[in-house]
Amino acid sequence: MRKLLSVLLALCLLGSLLVPFAVAEDQEPITLTYFYGAPGDQPNPDNKIYKMIEDEFGIKFEFEFLAGDLDETLGLKLQDEVYPDLFDGGNSAETLIDAGALINLLDYVNPEDTPNLWAHIEPEKNRIITHDDELDEDVMYIIPNYGLGEGEQIVNSVGGPAFFIQKQVLAWDNYPTIKTLDEYFDLIERFIAANPTNPDGVPYVGFDILTEDWRRFCMINPVQHLMGRPNDGEVLVDVNKDDYPTETFINQPYAKPYYKKLNEEFHKGIISPDTFVMSYDQYIAQLSSGIVLGMFDQAWDFGDATNALLTDKKYENTYVALGLVYDEDDVPAEDMPEGWTIEEHYVNGSLPNLDRGAGISVTCKYPERIIAMWEKLLSPEWAMIMNWGIEGEDYSIEDGRLTMTPEQFANTTDMEWRKSNRAYAIWDSSPKRQGYIMEGDLAGNCWEPGNQPENVFGLMNDYDKDFLSHYGFSKFGDFVNPPIELAPYGEAWQINKDPINKDYQDFLNIQDTQLPQVIMAPEGEFDAKWDAFVEAINPSCEVYSNFMHEEILKLVAAYYGE
Image (cartoon, rainbow, N blue to C red; front, side):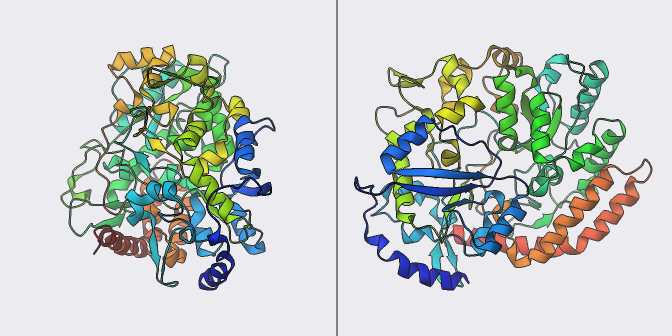
């Protein structure tokens, strides 16, 4: 299927490759359909950045934002073969790639014709460009939408996984340092005992566990982090050994203490049974209301809730990311992997977000127009527009530094303001400049307003400034250790599991159905429920572990050019 599509596309694209990657003044205006693989808001008709894109590139967009289950939605689109022009498959983008729904961008992207795009991917091209053995050619279906930062890594806050807790809970207990599960849940329990409801009389929720669809990682992934590793998805990898021993952690003895703790908290009423049937939209709504005191998640996953709380000036209800690890008494030595020591490493080295972002569908009639747009969006001028907005309106330049007023900086997280003043969906899914500005008069500034030093603390709201001062910190990234060096294989969650799809789906389905039952097990029945879960999942774990180990070794060899 993919080989046939590749041949047909090569014939169809031959003529278009002769067209220079620039927007000619006489090009016809076009409207591109755009599927965005996450919930979102339609931009307002008067959106100033989309109007600038239309004026510059002659392109309008019709957006379809995800409503419902991602995999089901993608499955229907693939079944009907009705593809949008731009296709963001979210965390299931591999489904689109394997179905042959996206074009190979290497038919367009090269150092000569697209110097900006090539320079963008070149430092990580060994990870981004792969060889398709079936097609016997190099392929790149999606240019990573995040993780290709310039300069040293910026960690002002935790954007990925952590145990999160509301700031007011830490403030209530005189700003303690929380490092372990017991300390974390003990604090939440004591806070609820003293403050069962919010000021409006709504009961607090102690700890939420999001389980819907691919966001099941909120229930599954914590164990690897408690063991001291950054995000490798569903496996624990020993990067200190040459052969990179790899195992699923969910069926290991060292996973049991975490779920035992959740079972105890469930019976104390800290975890509600409703959490296991909650949709993502309901979860975001609950977090946005300010009643959820804690959860394990990734910061980007609940960004809309954070922005809603900031817009409502509920600063005390926003969250701090904590890098919790097991205490030495939590896991007996005989239950630990051989030679394993626990040291907190929640933040990984900078990583391209492989196969995440927008691809161009095989039915798109204007791939060269999209490539030309992406090429120019990476220019310094357009990168400033997409990140900072309009000079004099959204920001200023003073003595070579990019600055914002408090009101302008607050706008960047205002959901309603964004509908008219940011091309957010395009920015989010497209190749983008991140990190430090490395050239020109603005060198030393940051591409993203949220990382600009003057904004990080200088324009921080007074509540957060005071909050950090109690810890002696200048940024919320100080609550966790500095980034660890990225492993040569990247992060294992990015590995495509399609070759073992049946076993992998069994692996996920058993967790989806049985782990909530383990967490809610009646008192005295937890051990039996846990043992039954481990017995049920062991066969698929064995297949999955072996597969992941083999794939990790391949990636290590490719990284080193072996």
